[in-house]
Image (cartoon, rainbow, N blue to C red; front, side):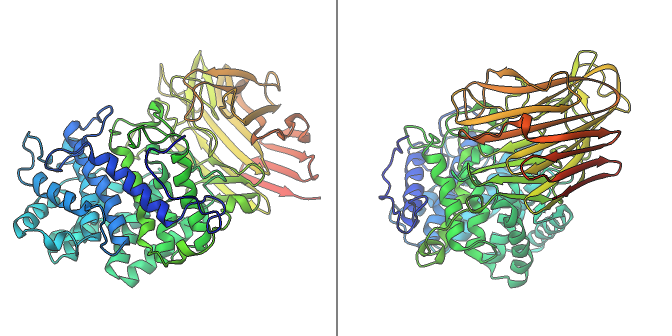
Length: 631
């Protein structure tokens, strides 16, 4: 699709895979900002972009437009050492003065005040972007402001320090505000307390493998990269705090070992978790690692991933005809959104422009592009900390994530029966999206009791590991129901995924099911005109090994209409159900009915042989254990 602003010619000598250079990044930032500023109020305090309002209301959405675009402008200008050819900072300075003149007033320019998360909390989110933008551009914006405007801006920002954030990454917003105030000589006991509180929470949320839970509990998603790593690492980098940078940067390096494998050969990030309308913000941590030096990736591979993600969305309709980022994935897509998503929400994609903090002579821009991890070899990587299993195949450039640890259910919450497509599915990929809540669920194990089908909510990891070319992850969950009682006493579903090449062995044990219950398992959702093929084959415990195709008329982020393969079988007491699944692109999908032989199920143990190489896999549930041996 055409991009509604001019870009430089592709450079396939320096960037043989994407064609993008630093000049492309600058041009995209300029194009996005030019389009957004056409919707500014006369004083520049609010940018009212078109689209459905968020639950926070139109004024908060207008502040979101100012704050999130300011972040892109700040990276753009700071990376150019203050060169501001489009006079962007003048506009943001005027908007800051207008917005903070009478906060809370119902007029054309005034910013909403910052309150607690459950009262009027969204402005706290935006305060971090304002503060970070001011910190990045301090020599050219903040230091030139009238002292009265500086005082008003500080007073507004301090609202983030005096109110209660959401119990997750939001605590990094006052942390970032406090970091800015400290950096301009306005720090005090209040800023110190906000920073200490955030640091303590961040430590308690660390789960290993470079992954943080997004708050208490087990929510793992892209917020790790674009929030939980970005704010503390960037803060330490800007402050020149070598000890803090070594600590947080070391965790970023570990995180990038896994995150770098979460981008397909076409540049797509994994379609997993919430706030997916932020799109290419998923690459922010990759670029931050290159900027700070805390990365396992070469500069050429880092740029390959970041530019690949940027180009992926620009080439696939993420921009409207006006040059604005739409609410969705490629084009508009309602099922990808949350209630807090507003017209300017997609501009958290601005975080990807942290790449521009690397100057033009940095190796991130001067080295030749190198392959992304998915382009180098087939890989299977387990991440026991978050309970995730990554499976990448070089031939089709597809990455799959098998979810045995991320559920977005808070410790204080009950197990609500509402399906959450962004977390509750067994698997996600760079080629498919989950089906909508009202449609048949993809990649889902459901127990049906008295005609009521269960959903998967709180996930309990049982372990994960990998060897040479294979890996596994396991978990259990308590099936809960949309109608009737919240659960069946003693009912439990245990699940193990074993990845080998492009094949997925899915083994499930249902415990405590009432007599006459049913169990269903679905595979990947794909559209009839897509090049991506989804296959599912029953090996044990199903009525028929061949799946039935179930329609998903609301489609996915990839296709307006999808079908989902589904297996069904009876269950009662304790039963075991075994299947093979596969997601491939192109004509070379392996025939699943011939992929394994000698399938044996004995109580809580499953054994089988892979025809491709004669290797043998043994899955046990008591205790959870997977062994894979080669002949």
